[in-house]
Image (cartoon, rainbow, N blue to C red):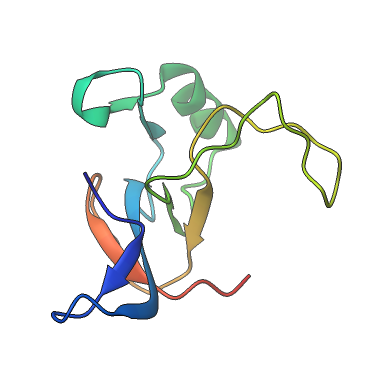
Length: 111
């Protein structure tokens, strides 16, 4: 139910987008939005958490996804010819503070 685009109180577009945070900065656990579950619950990905623990260093950024987006594995990317990963589009948030799991954040994409 989270809109991708941030709008003003007059319902006008802005240059900001929303993202849903899945992994807080400094975390050693991997969480993911699960689109196949009711309400798109956020659950821990045990395999991903194991890989992060083996890496041995907490993530130095907040990590999440843009709502209302999807990378279709049947479609090839125009730029690199790579298929989608069957998930929403990922985001790395390089801000200086930690964002909690499931928080909806306004952001300005850089690239």
